[in-house]
Image 1 (spheres, rainbow, N blue to C red):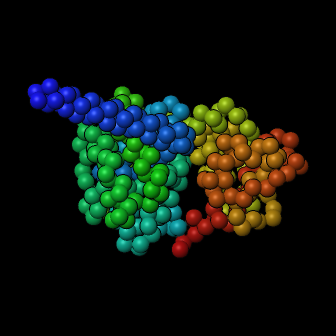
Image 2 (image 1 turned 180 degrees about the vertical axis):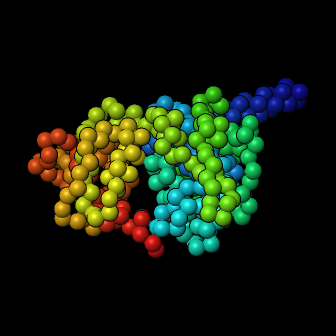
Length: 318
């Protein structure tokens, strides 16, 4: 009887060990699967004060975090004027823009594509202690949080992308997080308003220079495809805006020009063999472009980006 009890106990422990082994193996396999299908770069904004722009490079397995205080003023798109980040976020909610006004304004100010936002605490914008920002990021992307955010409609990031980002946050070491603080980097300056009040604004150009290649795509540097930008609209400087973004991502922009006729949507013109390249695919994704196959390109570029009314509309009032 005693031998039977011992045998029974051993069987339980062996079964438990086997279950634990397969659970751990399954978790490891799931993490590797998620990382395999994660795009080279994902960038998400956490609504907090300071606002946290968290970007993951899947090739380097490294996070870049940019922190910008909520009282920092930036230029809003669609002719809204200048707003502090926190106020711009609240305005987006009041006007029911679904995060589009806030995200597009931040993208254009920083020349940095952003995939979406998460709002971990709903109505209130939480204060983040500077020394505790990495722990706050981990808490904001705890594996149960994506389900809560999606259920309560406090994010515009697709479900799988949110899960993948949460898995990568949880499985990446703290020393693989590189942080840039806009305040400590002296990229904020005082600006006096007509009523005499003093506010803080972001020196976006200096901030971009200090970030250097932190948001680059490694594959773009490897491909080294030459990109030409054509502005087909009557609005000036659109080509320069896009050029700043593409160069920060690691693309080789070799010229900016005006062209006709005006296109309604953005077009990416390239040889058929370049259609599946990272350069072309990223341009198609960033600006919702149509691909136009052609061999009659300017001899200076491999890929032509033709900007049309769709991008121009960002700078026209709703």
